[in-house]
Length: 306
Image (cartoon, rainbow, N blue to C red; front, side):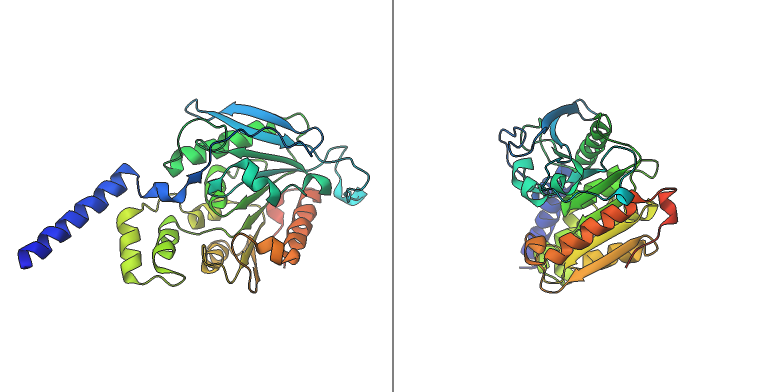
């Protein structure tokens, strides 16, 4: 019996090591859907943007210009700089593709923002396969550069909006030298390993769940470490009933850079329906973006806004 226990223990250790080294365990973070992603038909002037990641993988994105429709709530004079609209770089979550996530942001052009969104490798029409955070971070970086190349984008008025997994990738892709003035993160996680432990063991993972996640998932390029290097203001919105990414992740991100990060928690808010059930979250997000994209001067001079 003792030998059998030892054998099974060694076998389990070998299997977990193979899963970690091969990257198979990390693939559980990514749930892409491949399908055609033509530009949204209900957005005047929208277009498909094709570009390449650092390794040459061909990727697909959309640029949706700010709406000029009379019914659109316009930015007031104090919120405009020059003749251009502010631009938002959107980084979506782990499932589906741009088609699936456009509903989270389709109102932003009508609210006066240019919008750029894209698919990581293996998602939508983008080539390749999603299996590791490193290439997806490179994809996010390439998408950001592709957005800056669009003629409508004023590089002095760029913000970022990222959801869930997208926040982890964006925080690692965006650098301090990039022309980002402000960011909003919705339901982000603070650590890859802690996110895996939560998936295994629930909101308060115990030692077994934490041990399994430590054995299976590397924890480099942690979002809570990446956020410390940013100098611009960040708003984190998180529901306290989120069972996919518990609100403790949002608190950890706030604590990692409390001089730059504002956390707003919403009672009863879930992961995928937060802004549907809590319209206040959208209002806070838009106010935060407009305030900081309208400011002049060094974005580092602005601290968190309550």
